[in-house]
Length: 71
Image 1 (cartoon, rainbow, N blue to C red):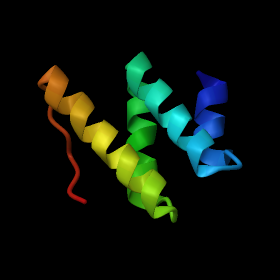
Image 2: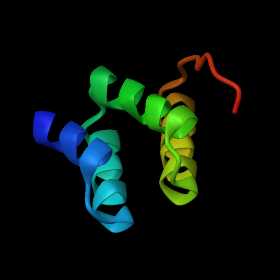
Image 3: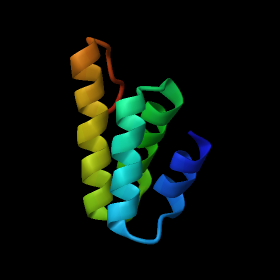
Image 4: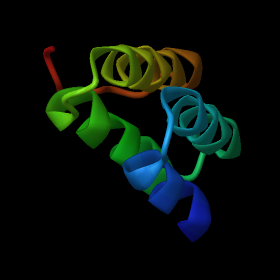
């Protein structure tokens, strides 16, 4: 889990960071999901940010939970 969080933040390529985001989404851990939110809001890379946003929304829609964010 920690290595995936690190890869999401510091991955060398977009693809590496996106793969880490998808893996965190699939694990469904609340820390990983919260980190997807942070990347969606604050990351400079538009593609990674957009994918994290979509994963974050999808997680909450599938689990019927509320998300407290407007992008």
